[in-house]
Image (cartoon, rainbow, N blue to C red; front, side, top):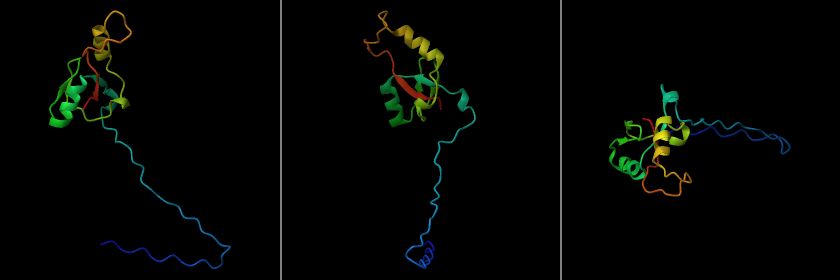
Amino acid sequence: MSTPYPEPAPLSSPDQSTTAVLERELLEQPVEPGDHERFAHYVRKEKVLESALTGEPVVALCGKVWVPGRDPNKFPVCPMCKEIYEGLRPEGGDGSDKSGSGGSGGAEG
C-alpha cells in the first residue's frame, strides 16, 4: 500500500495563499541508435494491417523486410520506395488511379 500524504498546514489567514508546483514526467518516444538512418517505406495497406494482427514481416517496394512498429510520420520517405512508387503511377500523374499500386506503411523496425 502507499503511504498517505501528510495533511496540508492550514493557512494562517484567509488573505494568504500558497502556490504549488505540479511535477509530471515528460513522455517521449525514445530515440534508438540508428533512428537517423530509418525511413518510412511504401507497403500495401492491407499488408501492414495483416502484419499488425499476425506479427509477420512485410516487404516494402524497395525490398526492405521488417515488422512495422513505429509511426511512419516520424521518418522521411525512403527515396528508393518513392522512386519505385512514382514509376508505378500512370503517366497522367494526377494519382487518381489507385489500382493497388501500394500505400504508406510503417517505419523501419
